[in-house]
Image (cartoon, rainbow, N blue to C red; front, top):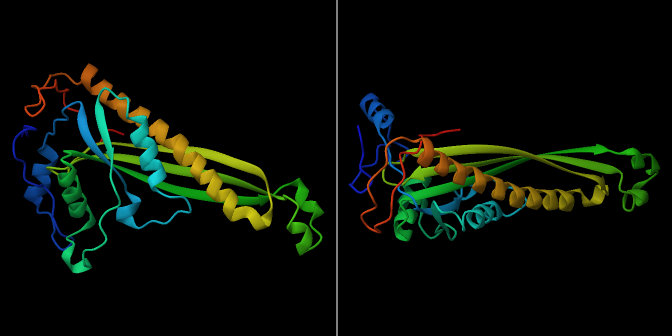
Length: 241
């Protein structure tokens, strides 16, 4: 089944968490073909706002870095979303994904780029820890080392159908070899901010490269976007990793 980008497309997935996909619906979703018209208007949203995952650093830092990295892209026109509205009562909200699609419609963005970040911090003593002789010395001696693994993800979602057009993951490492035990939390925040900014640039490059790959190797070219008169790209691979 081929879905024209300019045509009306019904959502292929349940709109509330209480609904379950039927076998027929799953088959239709697997057969669905989504065309990514480039340059694409993309709403960049921190996925942490949907999952509620907590990290010490502002999760919008990653989304902002990705949006900035795509600002000069020939294939994407990114818009950084404002925080999702908090005024609606829980019973009025179908599910986070449906609420996200409503937000994209307000921005008139056919595609949403979700960003996710997760961190693992490993703290261990360094050689200076031998100088610890009491609580007082721990205030001044940087006897801890912190090693951090960052797991960053970006997911490009077609708003009309709910299908993931592209997804990519990134693992980065950063460390601080000299940290005072009383300053571990602040050192971890600094490391997280560094990794979010570095990772945002790298994720933007990967997303941009995926669009170029689709244009170069995707096969058939699509008609120009009816609303903007711009050339469109070939079909992007579904959920390429």
